[in-house]
Image 1 (cartoon, rainbow over the protein chains, first blue to last red):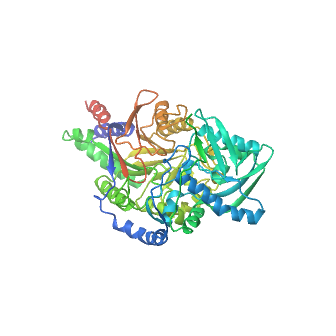
Image 2 (cartoon, chains in turn orange, yellow):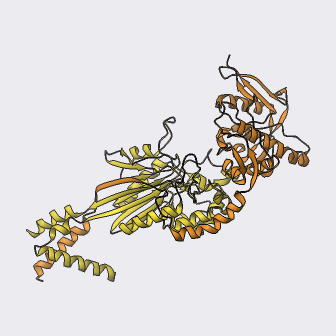
Length: 252
Length: 303
């Protein structure tokens, strides 16, 4: 190798190191993950003990659903939402009453918090995990009548079937204005305070429920919504959720 | 350094052969291929959906994904596997094991980098921190500041990976947490504007770090048609430059092929997202050609 050659070579290498690679072509595709792919054996073996442990609990049959219930079964109230809100009242109030001597006035949950359907047939532990995968738990918020009225305005504007328990009756006219709002049959009294059960996500302003921030007191029940559902399912051989008139809009 | 010298010497030998007039062409036109595989919003879906499922019967499953990833890696070792967040929450596996199994399996599949989704805070920032030892891959987020949390130092703004001499910069972006995640869960995590941070990151990665490929792993969502002011991957693509690929999540958007957007200087950006629950694996191949420059310049030197 002559000196001349070596110099040429050095120059070439210099250019090589300077020339940054440029994208000349891109190709994108979406690949299906389905039964045509053999499961990787090592991964499958790794999952197995975890799966067996979880499934042993999940496949416990705890109740029966005569129909399929979904959160899109109604405009302002649905059978599944009514079931959930009433379950929070039924399971939560005895504990709250025992601890404080007070009673829950009504329950408010959120439509988006119903994460799955209840399918017709056996209800298993897994059903409760599917409806409520989150770890949120019941809190009882003491609100002035003024804030409860704010909540009613929120519900009227939201136009969603946010679940409420049957102690609340809210009726809107065809334009969405509030015609009547009662709690345990009585109109909302601005000078009174009410005990509203909800979950910690909504209490902290989730779904824009800011009315919970102006509260008089907070009682944390340490009771997960999912455990409420599990306990409630276990009390019934067959559930019987119904859509009703607790939150409705009038047609004329 | 020894190894680098050796490589340079072997390159020299190859070039010398070329100078001899035999194969400069083939050296000059060498194409490199980088494969990017990606998932998003897997939400603890470890097992495939059952045959009775109304929507996704017999689809998904981590063990099948492992088979597919392995076969693609065998075909092209220069492959990255990325996840755009919401690894946690959605099946009892998460409720029972808190994300341990999700991270362990992602490690078995040799994920390279992931970003953090809103549901990854579902057991609180402490719950996420507790699972970090099970993750043999790295987390990136450029717009979450974790300095005053337990996650400090466990999440980097970006990660640079070199494959076959191609320098790949991957940075992360997360969604606004306020109103979406309970403050008690994310604690002192500070959210910054994704577009501003993306501009900083792309400049850093492209200009200072000289990356050949810049990828944004985003959990801000694909596009919000009813909320025109809400930042999204589409807005991000149009407002920035020097990003080659945005891999998105959060909105569970099923794209059958990547969307091609035009960035702030008129260049193409790919935006992709593969729905959710591990039903699909996204695959994007980037071919790099450094040949042209070498060939033309090299030839001129020779003359």
